Image (cartoon, rainbow, N blue to C red; front, side, top):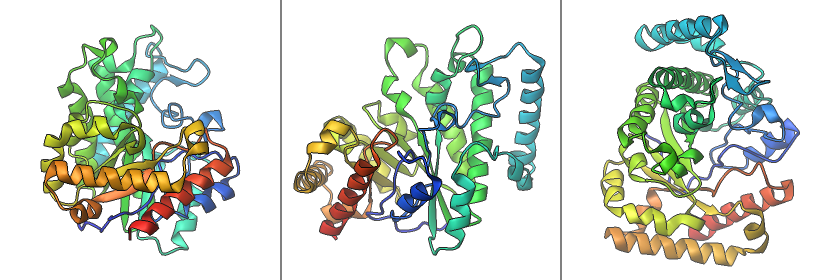
Amino acid sequence: MSYPDLSLATTHIGSLPFTEVEEALAFSFNFDIPAWPQLPKYKEEGMLWQFVRTFPGFDLQKERILTDTSKFEEGMLKLYEDYVAIIEEGKLEILETQLDRGFSKSFFVFIDRAKQSNYSILKGQITGPFTLGISLKIETEEALIFREDLRDLLVKYLTIQALAQVYNLKKAAQTVILFFDEPGLSGFGSSAYITLSKEIVLGMLGEIISILKSHGCLTGIHVCANTSWDILFDCGVDIINFDSYAFFDKFVIYADKLIPFLAQGNKYIAWGAVPTEKETLSKVTIEELLSGFLRQLKSLAQLLSLDEEFLIKHSMLTPACGMGSLTEEMAYKVLKFIKDIKGKIL
């Protein structure tokens, strides 16, 4: 596949504070790489529930996967049949019907609007397999991720859902980037997940990412806190998005992994350079953000023995996290700060 130049390209994580689709779309198209807006003010567009509407056995009322029902068995068989047809037999037309039209108020409108513009790159996003796996529970209160069979089912399901996004977004843009939102990875390694090895997590992420890349999609992972960053460097992803405002010092501990990651070419660090925590955002100035970002850039370049220009070429700019919990006014402040940082660097 051909790789676009993403140097200092701006995009957002996904969630926005708006309730009106038109306002959310107008906001999103201010970024270099627009992302379809998630609107978590509506419960059904929360990051956990938005992407599991059609998961076998999912009951929105109970917020559980009911595995002891015929509906689950039928759904599981249908999912595996679709997976084989799409992935192994190449019947991509099946992807047309894989996204529930009600999963997002903005997704399909976003595509229609993008078709009328000249954007060559669009971004989609989906909750990642680790975060969903530890969050979704069956009727016994056990999380899906601890059952190998359900873990595999979740990976296959997310693969289809992610590909369906890519399939639709490619109707409006030549290049699609799909981010996996993985806030749950901040808990990896804790006692609650001690039975989950790095190999299990890498297997989940790597399987989906490799299939997306084989279909010409660029991939990214967003983690808004600290985590075992080596997992992200090793899973085959193209873009690693982190909260550089709050967690830069934790991120650079993995500098030995960052060097070979960037050396592969067409790999990017997406700096979450503008905080999305309300109190911090209300007090911070553009001067503080710019000086902080430049200081981090210089520090990382020295640590890696790389030229700053090389790092800039392999950097993108984003908010530190989603903006769904902000006020609309604050979201516009984040947008302005991101644009100002880019403008002052170029």
